[in-house]
Length: 329
Image (cartoon, rainbow, N blue to C red):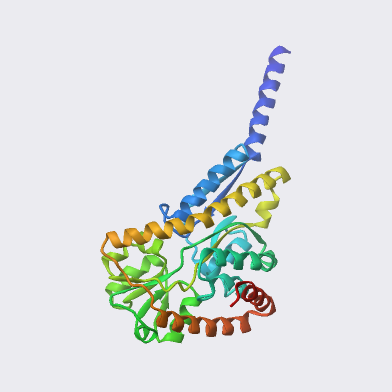
């Protein structure tokens, strides 16, 4: 009898360990950028904080550099369909599925991170409504420093843009190219160097941080901070995966995410300043934008935003109207 009790006790202990192990959850997080990029480092901090705060009930495993095989425009649907439980999604890359999400990727709409965050806060309820249609929600967002252009020659006016063969990463870049005579091509960052060597490109449009990541000084000479857009990234989770978590765990994750969002938005400015210094240290010439050129760029931006808003619909138009009223534009 004693042996039977020992066996039963052991079996119950094993079952308890098994059920505890089964209760723990793992999410694989798709990241677009290299592990050393500040967005990826932020995601690692988020994963670490979540694991700690939930006592290991949720583990988030990072997959930087798009190593899970998904491209930017595919990500909204990949999360919607449960191919990914969680993913980093740039708002401007998924406007083919949800046009209003590209609001924070419109050209020359803001001049600093404060204005860009204001725009996102105004858009947040509409973003949430649209993301619900895609069976997902945003845990936190982060922002890139504003994008400039990297070239082989100086760019001092709108007319200097004509004829450039530029790599862009979203619909805003394509529209900007069409409006200014740039031959714009949307492609992943990994394809930029081969395309330049083949003569398909002679410049690119991206942030100071990405320029450092790519060691742009090895193939290009000038960085002109036209500040066309400060792209916003969402960390989105599939709702089916989210709803499998208990309520206490959900609340804990949202608390960690709220702090992470503040940290990431505050970090963008510091990263921009550091990246500018690194570009200069490596021989990149930073060309300031003169008043005349800035006025030309703003005029292009107004035209492109108006055309986009007409297609994006009433929600986008209402947000823009409120944002323009607050900022005095």
